[in-house]
Amino acid sequence: MIRSRTLVLLVSAIFITILIGIPVASMEPAGEVNITASGEGVSQWGPSVAVDGDGNFHMVHYYNDGEDYEARYKKLAPDGMIVTNREGINPAIVGDGTIRWMEIATDQNGDAHIVLSMRLTSNDFYDIYYTKISSAGSVLVQAAPSEHEKCVRCWHHRADVGSHSEHPELCGRCIENVDGSGEQRRYA
Ligand SMILES: [Zn+2]
Image (cartoon, rainbow, N blue to C red; front, side):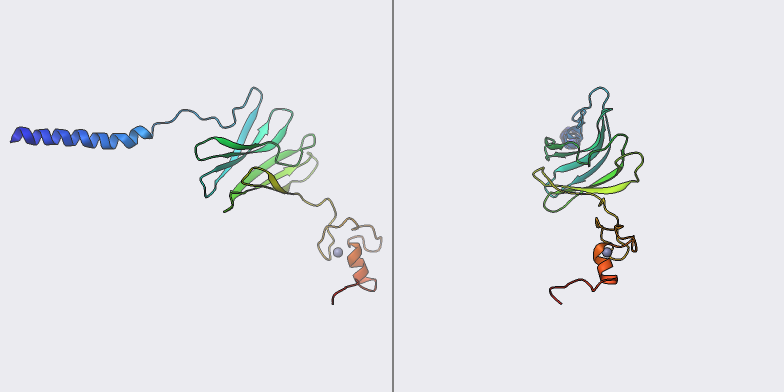
């Protein structure tokens, strides 16, 4: 009787050890996984990450090889395979411009939305740039600040702001509305 109880305890202990051991064993590290695999003289850092509804992993990060300084985007399928790898998703940097910060988010379609703060040269101020990359990996939208001056009246960035000496801060349309006979509206 005592021997069989000992046997039951022994078998139970072995069984419990196996049960506890299985999840512990499966949590062993699978080895080092290097997503960017930099070569000599190349630095890649500062990732921002997001995961979409299908379990795909999206990442933007800085890349610098001494000549090119840019933002790169990668998408990994749930099995860890890189399915999209896009270089230079930022507007081209001229000379000594820099990227200071970047963030990524995904939507329900699996598209990636990226914003980054950069200045094109060291003499510029920082601006926010936006890039949208489709779930298939193509760049859908790239938005950048307008090169034109902002009209103080309508807040639109227009090429003709500053071209009128009497109203240097207004666009042509607003000057017409302020000084002229008014904008010709086809529909009241
Ligand atoms: Zn205006």
